[in-house]
Image (cartoon, rainbow, N blue to C red; front, side, top):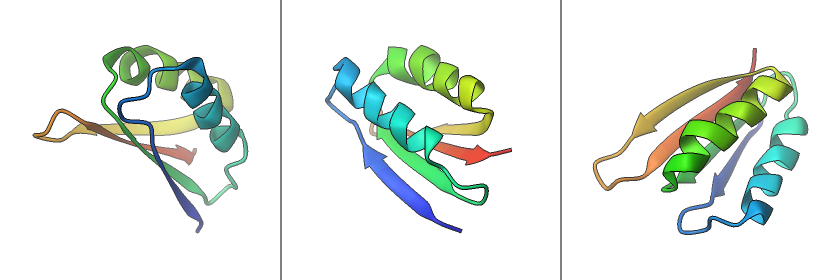
Length: 75
């Protein structure tokens, strides 16, 4: 199982979300994508949309420091 990590904290540009989308599309059937993010709209809107469109499961955990840890995986 291949796991990839992306940290898009502090970055709110559409480019960062396009990187997330590109990596999500490239996930192998057993792959996982772990994303660290501190942008509320990205966590609640953009990344869930990407997960839905790509047929990925999404788990989100908020850490005490205000960041979210997001796990995307093939269903």
